[in-house]
Image (tube, rainbow, N blue to C red; front, top):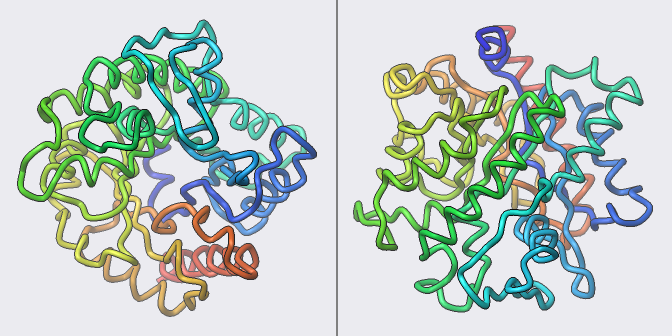
Amino acid sequence: MRKQLDDLLLTTTDVGSMPLQDDFDGSRANFDRAMVDKVTLGLKFPCYPQLGGTRSKPMNMGLQFLIPLSKTNPNIQINGEEVHLVSDEIREPSTPIGVERAEYYATYLREHNLIDRIRGIKACVTGPFTLASYLNSGNLLTCGASKPDVVRALAKVLRRSCRRLGDLGFDWISIDEPFLSLMLGRKHELMYEYDERFVVEMFNMLIGGVPCLSGIHVCGTVTPMVKTVLLESRADIVDHEFAASPKNLQAYTKDDLERAGKFLAYGCISSIKPSVETVEEISASVRKALGRFGPRVILKPDCGFGGMQNVPEAYTTVLGKLRNLVTASRKVAAI
């Protein structure tokens, strides 16, 4: 594990999603293209691609896990992108859910001799609070994330998925929790009737049994409660956006990271702006991060690029962003 942590210094990764239409259940041309491009660009820990669906065949970070879960839980009913939880009981399937893309990714890279070009393979798993927020999402205060028993049941389901990823040889598992910055509010109050210890317990349930690096990705503002929960968790890596939220530079200190034994995945390029940041702009941002946080910094985009799917020339733009990210990493590391 020590060697793995040393390999993270100023390394590069991505969050997962790319602005291409999902074709995993079809030709997989888009999926294969995104896999190969991430490796070819020089990302050291490329994440398997998450691609967006269409109105007639929706797919997103929630449905990737909820569609297979609904097949063994008839009380989870899906209509398009809407997911209804008829009752709070969720039964744990006998096999891991939502890992088919990761399984294919790991096999493809090895069979096509791409694995030696990177330092490790990364998987993203939608966290239990964000996944629960998709259930009965019409009312934020009563959605699935408001119910501890539902969140706990989903965490148990996702724990099996994380263990499967560990068995597949993944080097890094990221728990993606964009809902957390909303749930853990700015006034030191949880949105729902449970406490911070419950949030930490759910994360530790997922990552406690995996043999690889683990991280928690939370976009948006790093509130004091987000910081506390992530630093107290067993995760090796805390992952945030800084290009869109520069005030997050004040969220942690070098001492915070060192005391907790964490690395910071630093979002230094926008995941929504349809323009390519220059190498010089990225390098300047990275140097600022190093001055604030010390060397325990990993370079990445703010978030996934799925939100750019309908932007003209989005995929070409994203490749340019990632290419300059890699170049900036090498430039700063060489100083």
